Image (cartoon, rainbow, N blue to C red; front, top):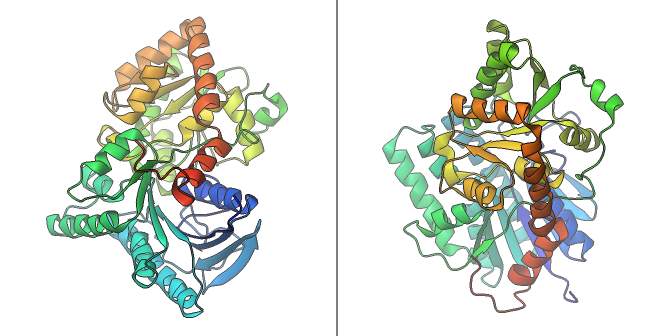
Length: 424
C-alpha cells in the first residue's frame, strides 16, 4: 500500500465507547492509521451504551483530539434520557446537523478525501456523505450499515406514522442509490438491502470481527471473577451487551425465575447498561428473583475473563428483529469457544451461521419454554457442549480475525485492486 489515501469516517459512535458500532468504527480507524492511511473522524461525544455523555466530555461545542494518529472532531448533539422513536430521530438529526457544520468547515478549508466512510446508524449521517460528494465527484462514498434502522423502527413498532415511514424510506433510498459502495455485516442484511426498490451500485460484505489480542480463550482468573460479586459455587449464565427493548431480555427474567427452584446450581448475570436496565432491575426485584445479578459493562481485560468463565452465553433478540441486526456479541463468544443459546428464526443470517456451522444452539425468539428445555439439557448433559465449543473456536479463527477482514476491505473497496464488481 504505497499510495497514502485520505479517509474521512463519519459516525455518531466512536472511541472510547466499549461496545457496539463505536467499537468497530474506532478499531477500523486505528487499523487504517496503523497501515499508513491519513484518517480523520467526525463523531459525537461518547455516550453509548449508558445513553449519557461519558465523564470527561462536556458535549458543549466542538472539540478536537488526536487518538493513535487519527484526527477526531467531536460534535455536540442531543442525548435523550428516555428512549422513544421520536427522540431517537431527534438525536440523529442533531448529530447530522452538527456534523454537517463540521464537514462544511473542512470543505471551506479545502480538505479533500479519497473516501468518505459513513457508519449507520444513524442513517441520516449518509446525507453528510452525499453532501461532500456533491462538490467532490471523485471521492468514493461508502455507506456501511450495522443496523437497518428504518426497517427496524417499522418492524418493532417504534414509528407508527405511515407518512413518516414513507419519508424515511425515500430518504434511505436516496442514500443507497448514490453510494459507491453499500456494505453491511451479514449476508441476510445484504439480501434485505438488495431487495429494496432502489438500484445499488456495489455491495460489500464487511462483517464484524474479533481482536484476538484482547479476546481469546484462556483459563479465567477466579480472583477477578469473584470480585464482581456473584456466587462462585454456581454455574454462570451470562448476557453481556446493550440493554434495550429490541433485545427481548425479559426472557432472562423468566428463565432465572424458573431456575430458582428447578436449577438452583445456576446464576444469571446481565452485564450491560442503558435506560432499559433499570426497568429490568425493578421487575427482578418486584418478582423476587434472587439468582439474577446486574453488573456494568466491564473493561476489556475483565470482560475476557468473564467470557471464559461463563458456563453459558445468552444471545437474545426479539423475533421481529430478524435480519435487521446481527448481535456483535456473538463474535466474542465464538472467539473464546463459548457455549451459547441463541434466539433466532429460521432463514435469518444469525440462524444460518449458528445452525450450518454448529457453533451453538438456536431456539425460536420469544419462546421461554424452548430456551428452558435446551438450558436444562445442557446443564444435565455437559458433554454435549464439547463439539459446539470446538466448532465455535474454529469458526472464529477462520472467519473473524480482525486484520484479515480489514485488509480485505482495504484491498477490495479502498484500493479496488481486483476491479471488484460486487461481493456477496
